Amino acid sequence: TETPVGPMRWFRVLALRGRNLVSLATLASWRFKCFFGPGLDAVGNRIRVFSASAHIPACVMLIGGVGWMAGPACLVPRHSVQLYDLCCAGRWQEAMQLQRKLWRVNRAFAKYNLAAGIKGGLELQGYDVGPPLPPQASLSEAGRAEVKAILEDLGALPPGTAPG
Image (cartoon, rainbow, N blue to C red; front, side, top):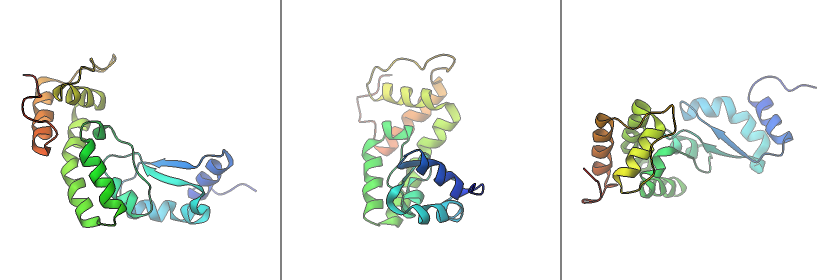
């Protein structure tokens, strides 16, 4: 019989394909748990969940996620590892405080373009990564200034490493 549309069908399809890692971008952990909770409970440890949204990794980790993937982690790796460690230690208040600090990076990426934000930020950190592939534009001067200010504020741009 066909599994009804919804989380159980989604998990069944993944299980049938032999997948054991699920990426979910969600709006809030309670919505995630309400929608996907029955599927997560049904599959137990056979599927591991990680967040594909840089905005809410602590929320996903709180309900059993095992990590996340995110462009901003390229620019703030120490902060991302610290966030992961706080989540693994169950220090949710501290994790949420850190996640809120990192939201500025996410907002800048959403405002200017993910590839431009990452590449512009890496250039500010001294890495020669080249421009984004067309048709994406490079980070504008305003974007560069905003990303630089955010990275400086987070301590991810040591003095003297940023050109111009």
